[in-house]
Length: 201
Ligand code: MN3
Image (cartoon, rainbow, N blue to C red):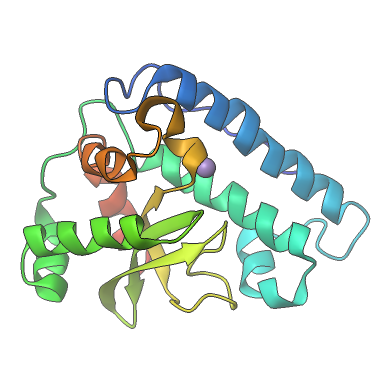
């Protein structure tokens, strides 16, 4: 029942020019793979062996740091690859658009708030759009934490996540995190965000 690295749903070069192929390849085949390998090693023969990521993460505070960090690392990247796609971006329609307007007033206000959450996360972490108490909320978490973890300041079900670790952008953008964030809006897969919104209910 070991965890495995999922295949990317597109080529490493598919998100260019916004996210370059080399970054994607290293991010998926090295970083994400390392979270998989390290979690499997950390839980081998332990009570967590055979549990779902969700069940491990909801009691993150009770686990060793390696289990917390690597379970989050797997979940967050599993989500990240699917909420991006080539020729993505634009503005969401339907239920996602309505939910965003209801929570933030407008798409532009949401975009600013989510971008700020990523830009102001000190060090490594993630920006999130999550369903919290039946409403959408924006927040950020450090390291590989996420809103499903009991240790998180912001709790909810994540429907969109943006990786702001340097490994997600440094080869192409170096220290220009805001430029990476601005380009992230061109690769969002709003259909997948809509699916996640549905599954949160
Ligand atoms: Mn990453």
